[in-house]
Image 1 (cartoon, one colour):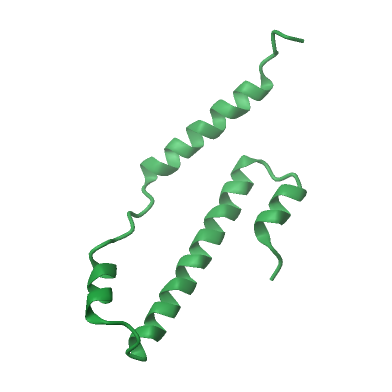
Image 2: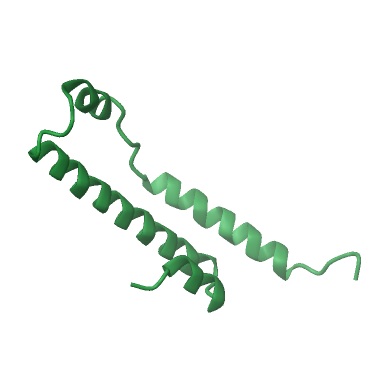
Length: 88
């Protein structure tokens, strides 16, 4: 599979497209991590202490508020780019 983040930078995706690509890469990494963890558990490769540490440190899920914040940041950035500059 091609390197998705490098493709995003080279092809001129806008901010939303780059966000989607980044979220896809994050989701893919999380799935691979989960699959590897499941494999390690099945093989008995992890101690009870390690499993307890993993279980007690949950990853905070992305909420609709998080997405709204990202959308506001993108909109602000687009307005800044569109605004005429004083030093021109």
